[in-house]
Amino acid sequence: VLEILSLIRQDGDPEWCRSVPNWERGPWLETLLGYRRARANARPRIISSHLPVHMFPKAFFGSRAKV
Image (cartoon, rainbow, N blue to C red; front, side):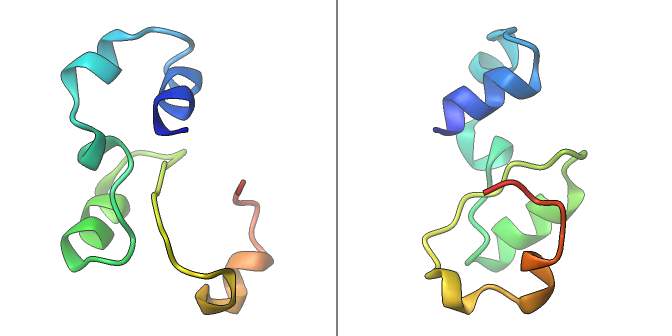
């Protein structure tokens, strides 16, 4: 899914996928390093997570984020 989202974000250009590691393109939200990377990434952000949906902040569900 990360590869597909990365291609969509870059209008189908695979160069970004080849040149940027997946942990930078879609950092893990559960780790401090991943959280910091996600905050620093340009919008729209791609964020990876294995958190159960009930652990996401309530503000997330009122946002325009795509899941």
